[in-house]
Length: 157
Picture 1 (cartoon, one colour):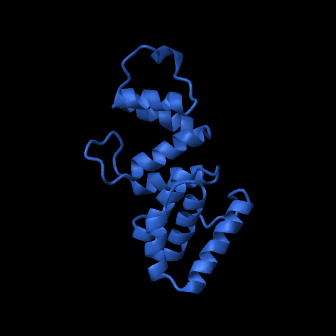
Picture 2 (cartoon, rainbow, N blue to C red):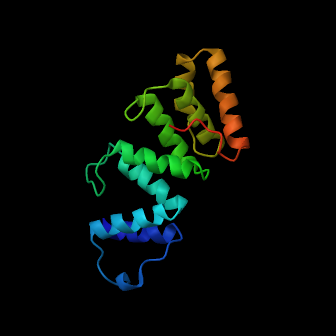
């Protein structure tokens, strides 16, 4: 698993610490490395941490399921316009695991993810059956405001 994280850190345009080049990295070192990258503002690392801490489906866990930590990284990456995190935020709002369930905000984030190239048609269709037409319009208006403000005026938890 650590080898996967090393490869992903290169994909995130991140440099490995010189002392670790060629060494077998432990899972703990890999987690620390990604956390340092994310703390420094690296949006790709923030996205990976958002997804890894929030992934409840993996059987092999390098990262424990921790929705509060996932939310922290999702929020940071969303502010940088990472559409992958929009999908994660949509799910968090729909499920209500970290914050109160809110289908209007779930729709808003799914709409943003979909418009940003991260297909969310089935989520959008499902939420449209729950929300009223007025709520759908409100969510789409909020999404447009979020995007037009360069993600500074979003409904972030």
